[in-house]
Image (cartoon, rainbow, N blue to C red; front, top):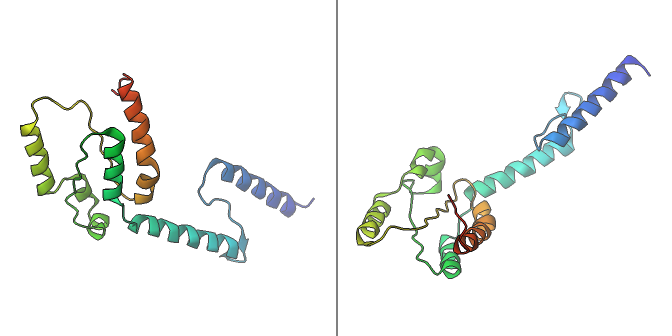
Length: 154
């Protein structure tokens, strides 16, 4: 085996071990100075899926109805200070602040409440409405059943 063949084999083995450790695109092959077509198309597909996920809309009304049915409790739908997705992508800090009507609603509920709340869960879509749609209800279901069974959620 020549030195070049040995080096190539070592590179392939290292790339294979690295790929087993991470979903990142490491150790990709080349055709001349360019990426292989397969790798380029895989990247473009993943990039398109990520863009679609970021711009997808959360069906908040449907999720709120399912959460209310599951828990039998009131579900408050609040909004962040980012008026829309485009603004949120430009100013993610606004996604961490409630808008004025939401703050007023919470202040009003707190003033009307004679006892403190025992449990409050916040579900927010952030950059992935799809993740919330897939995981929020099952997570809340597990938390709710554990809490009702007396488990401490602290």
